[in-house]
Amino acid sequence: MQYLRHQCFNWILAIVVVLSMPAILSAQSGTADLTGKVLDQQGGALPGVLVVARNQDSGTFRQSVSASNGTFQFPGLMPGVYHVEAELAGFNKYQRTDLRLEIGKTVAVDITLTIGGLSEQIAVTAEAPL
Image (cartoon, rainbow, N blue to C red):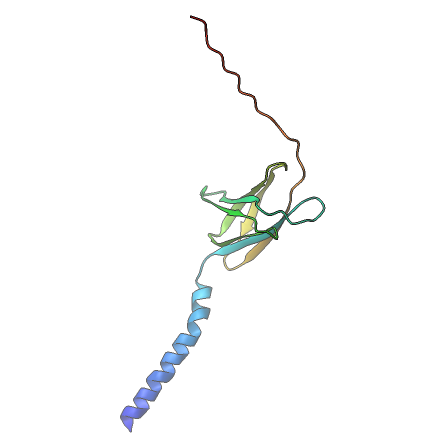
């Protein structure tokens, strides 16, 4: 009887520990998330936009490309102050600095890209005559 009671206690303890693990792990994750949507001036979603999140203190960065609905995400970033850039051909580059990410929080940033002028680069090379 004593053995059965001991086994029952062990099982109950194991179940309590397993059920509390997600709460313990999420509380100690120590990261932040950055999400958002890239839109054009009319509010339409822009897919294929390169978005870069750079930690202003350490210089480390991550890249993402917006999905077909314009959304992007950076899960598991280290907390700190970030610089966010977004770039797509035919549009002006978007930049935002001093974006603070805190432990356990998700920051949503909606980015609007404005149409930019097209630019051409011409390379001229010449050789000296012999």
